[in-house]
Structure formats: structure tokens, C-alpha cells
Length: 277
Image 1: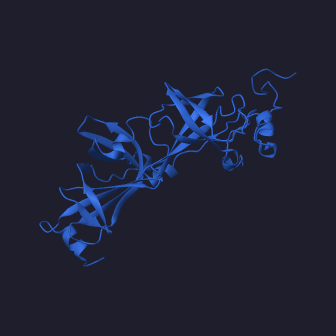
Image 2: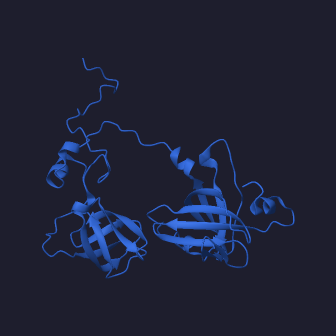
Image 3: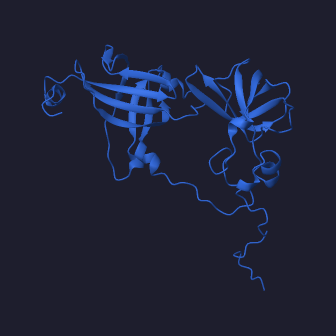
């Protein structure tokens, strides 16, 4: 872009009128913010002015420490999403640098929101990490165990979650859980069927919220976290849980061929310090 109007204004001491554009994306939901005191038209859409700034780019020896800190109005939608239970899906942030009046706005930073620190009613800090930081995180090691180490419905497990999905209606909310009624009257309720499973619902048709189910009492569930965002009468989709043992894998999911545990392991370790003979 050598010789472009963006370059000329970018290096100019007096001609530069820099505006930063912040695009937050959660599923299909998008929030666009711009620095300054007026709306900015870029890429055919308006970016709303708001009290927002950042502390600039940092590049250290490790990507996991290169936090990108954004200070924003506490009343913004992104901050309010973290006032209760955090979103179930990651929020992506793309930051562009725009010279006001220009049509070019190069991307200067891309990453994900990791947490939000609420200062007061005026401002809050959004802590973000780069995509590289997520790639550098260490994964779990696969060890020998009696129970299956795989997460239910993942690629290693191989069970299709859509085949076991059950539609339900929330009939009542209470502290730590909710009562429900299955939409299919022909589906018999089984004891603890959804225990260790989860349920989800759609927010404004844009993104999903999920909660893990700790206890299923046939007519009500105790959830992991809070029931904020839920309302009585809302439609949810429930997914059965697994006890990670051969019985559940066989009887509930008919998936013993993918069972990753070793239930016949001996109860004594050969490395416990006591000789075998």
C-alpha cells in the first residue's frame, strides 16, 4: 500500500486522524464499536461510538503473556455478557486501524476474549489473548484408566449427539436448577438419564448458551453454574450424560467398540514400592 492515502495519514504528524474499530463476534451475533465521538461508516456498516480504548500491542517472549487489554464502557453488551455466567462459546475480537475518511482499515490484532474485569459502573477491562496463545496451550495426556477418558459426543467417542437430543420446556426455575417437561410424550423418563450431560438454548437465534447437568431427578435438574439467562417456558435441548463405564457405553449408547477405558486393570500398581515376590 505504498503511497496510499492511509500510509500518508498514518505517518503524518498533523494529518493523521486515527480511529480504531473493534468487532466482537459471538456465534452469529456481532457488535461493532469505534473510538471517537461519532459513528464511522466502514465496509458498508456503521460502527457505533463508545467509550473504548486499548493499551496497545505487546510482543513478549511467550504468546500466552501477550494480553491485549481493552477498556470499555461497563454498559456495553460484551461486558454485560460476563456479569453472570460467561458465554458458552468464545468471543472473537478483530481490531482495525482506520484513518477517518479513508476506505482502508488494515487489521492490527485478532484474538479471543478470555475474561472481563469489572471496575465500576463507568468502565471495565476486557482481557484478550491472541490465537497463537490458544495454540500454545498444552493438551491433556491420554492415560490408562478404568473409566473412559473421552468426552461424550467428541470425535474419539464417536456418538452423535443429535441422535440423543431431547427437546424440553423449562416449567420452573429455582436456585441452582430447573424443572422441565419433555416435548415428546412418547419418551419415557429414565432415572438420572441426563446426569453428567448438558443442555443448551439459543439466544436471539444468534448463539448458544450451555450448562452442564450435575444431577437429574427425573422431573428437575441441578446445573453446574447459575440459571441466569433462563426463563420459565423457554425451549431447551437436553443431551444425556454418561457414567464413563462399560454399562452406560453399551446399554445407553451402544458404543462399546469406542470405549476408551480398561475396566480389567489390576487394583494394585506394580510401582507402589512393594515387591510382587
